[in-house]
Image (cartoon, rainbow, N blue to C red; front, side, top):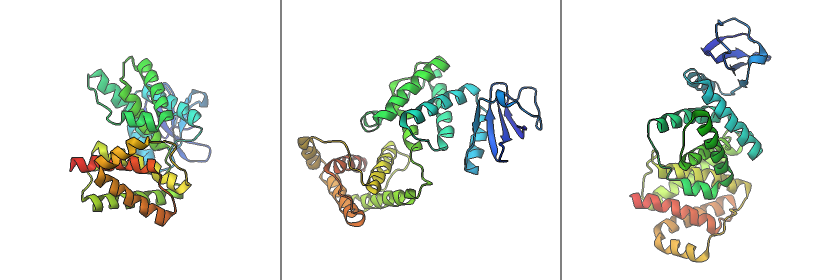
Amino acid sequence: MIIRKILNNNVVVTENAAGREVVAMGRGLAFKRRVGDRIDDSAVEKIYTISRADMMDRFKELVASLSIDYLQTANNIIEHAEDDLNCRLNDSIYISLTDHIHMAVHRIRHGILIKNMMLLDIKRFYEKEFVIGQYAVKIMNKNFDVILPEDEAGFIALHIIDAQLDFRQPMANRILNLMEEIGNVVRMVCRIEFDRESMNYYRFVTHLKFFAKRVFMHQESADEIDEEMGLMIRKKYSQAYACADKIAALIENKYEYQVSSDEKFYLTIHIAKFISKK
């Protein structure tokens, strides 16, 4: 491989056998080397082949300023997640997770703690991803000599969840359209506008991604909500439940998917949070 650009002592831009731009990482890979020098393949620990040009540019910008330890830690976690989930994660995870690990370590070393308000939901709805998050925290604690809180496992899980949704797939546009339709129903029925920077909105969107995917794959929710609990929520949040009912009607009529009482329950909870903020 020929060095096309040096990002730091450990990371260079080069080309693979097909002439495609890639980023190569290895401890001391570019030490005392210049652009145009050849590097030994045995010194390369990881090659990043990122399909989108804009994403590759963001990745190069990120890794140029980071220690190799953050890259190696992110790689460890991503490989573990792909093995555990038996799927390939979206390329964006190399950017989002590496950056997150760096910021998380920086925060904890400066005594800055951020509470994960979604932790209980993540534990309940995304058990596998949360377990991966716990694994990630152990690796980060060991590699950077820190003690991260359980909240961090939840944040890592969110990155893994998002990376499983490949919006280049044919289903992607349908998912995005349905999410927009649901959002419009909530806005019109509840007469609210979303704060797109809020945690409630982020939580709602995360839920809708997986809900919409289940709709198009005709998969029902595996959860079973206690009937008494469901009645209590329906009574306490009547406006939110009425909105969830309209969403269910839209989906049943347009997409021929029977929305379960469990799905309505979770939609009601999310919508109720927007109403209470209003």
